[in-house]
Length: 118
Image 1 (tube, rainbow, N blue to C red):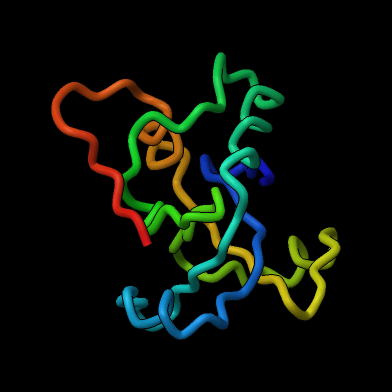
Image 2: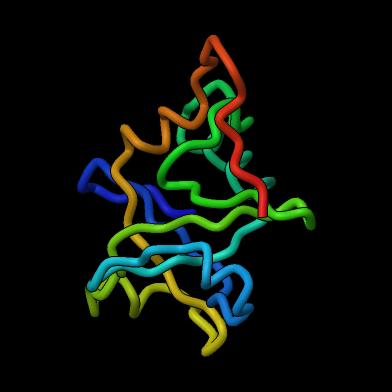
């Protein structure tokens, strides 16, 4: 996960090849879904946030898997300069997510759990 100067985060994760997961998603043109460990969000503390614990499972998180990973969806990152600074293997892709959407994941919400399991 990388903080940008555009008030967003770039989330790098594994491309999704599992048909059971793909069938649960509605990925619009220009968007990508990647799978990341939930622990990835703990790195948000390096950007000055007090916690990286997910408390609100809503968009951009689309699915929480039984393996303790989450499927995150957003606009595909295609900036050549940014991609040139990353190590991006063929089996990975990355998305750009607004900072506000990431912060929303960390906020304590009242009411029923909005978690959507795979």
